[in-house]
Length: 314
Image (tube, rainbow, N blue to C red; front, side):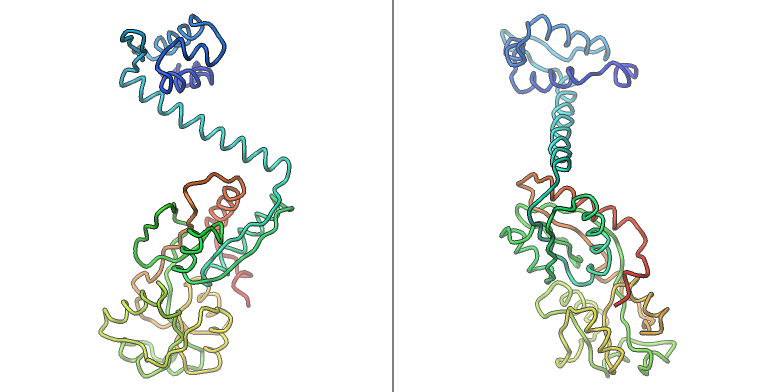
């Protein structure tokens, strides 16, 4: 059997298995491929000899796949569908992808990995016009369902299930609390959550998943941020505010570490319990698109790399 899978199994075998599963008769399979029934019967015999197991039994005019035959046929269908999808993607790459692709992202992913993914994309599809739009996670997923954007990169607080959408994890990176280097909290080695309540905060947009996540974290410590908090999703604006005021802000861990090294901010020594750590990319599951597949591939590749220092500079 090992020899069969490693050396004997051919594409014609896979096509025959898939056709048997769909058509249910050797005669119909032969007609579909425009060959004789004996040619199809020989392929079936080759598969059975290689496996040492029957894959087919006859019930009248019907050809019924055995459990082993059915499992093999389902795998054959899956392989052939993947190959066809790959063929379409390569064909699109050969002629050069054109048109416009819209990627939606939360602000905390636009320093990394989104820029690195875009650089990979432009190298592989230089004729493709690209548009990046920032928004909250909730809004991005709604816009994705409405087909206003093509992919959405969001940070997760709770599991999200949206009808017609599929997703996968891109990376795991917690959010941390930070202040400007001259802030009085930056000079205190041990802090309690109540120490933070004397100061103003920069918080995510009200109603967003990020706002809900931060609210829940503070509530778990019996705290809440001031009603007069500043709502902002702009990373550059937030960094500037921290440098010039007595504020507390929320940043991705790697971004914050880079700015700490540059003397721009100080990270507060409080455990944020993996706040918004999971970054996912969402797409519509009811369509196949070669351009989307390429952008997704670039996002996955960029997410697997270490965040370069240059991506953190504003």
